[in-house]
Amino acid sequence: MKKIIIIGGYGNGTVAASTIEDINAHSKTKEWEILGFLNDRETNPINGFPVLGKVEHEAVIEYLKDDNVYFLYTLISTKLNYSFLHKLHDLKIPTEKFATIIHPTAVISKFAKIGNGVCIQPFVSVGPNVEIGNHVQIYAQSLIGHNSTLKDYSYVANNACVGASVVLEEGAYLGTNCSTLENITIGKWSLVGIGSVVIKSVDDYTKIVGNPSRVIGKT
Image (cartoon, rainbow, N blue to C red; front, side, top):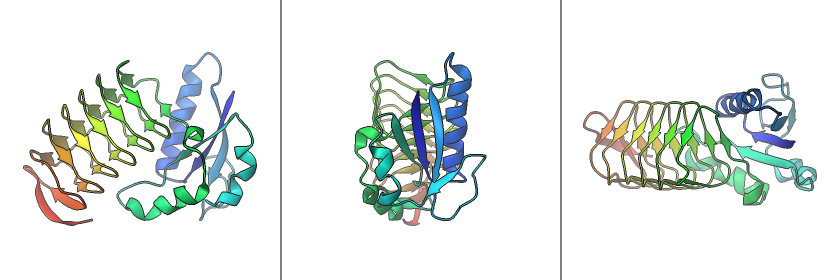
């Protein structure tokens, strides 16, 4: 049985833990053992799982020696943005040691390519020839259209609809219930607000909202 340590806590981390528990419940044999969390703020158990230490390299050294231990980094969101990436890099965890977690109700095309450290939530649909990078989070009931590319650290909130052949550049964030036209690019670390309808490409580090979406600032 594989073991996993979740880097984060309440929020993305606990949602990921719930997905892992659903995977175990759905499987004939338990696939994952959640060892606990790494968290800088909490010391008490998080949803019944122990906090193993802070988010720092010293906390993972011993676990890296165990071939059955994997990690999931969840400290990526619209609030944390790229400012928390140094936490990930400072851990010095090899890319292949990050687990990809896919909820059993998600529908993933056999022609899709998915990287490491990806978390895909309930009832997500990923079309053929989609390429998903590393440390990408896709939340419940989202749709990723065929031939789209989601680069490292991009984030798709629940019920978002990504049109065909769309590119989410590094760290691009799509808010709840937003939709994109096909064949456009959402720039690096840009932010698409809740319910927005995106009909043209978005520059890097740009914040947009509305239907049709309009620029309201920078990230």
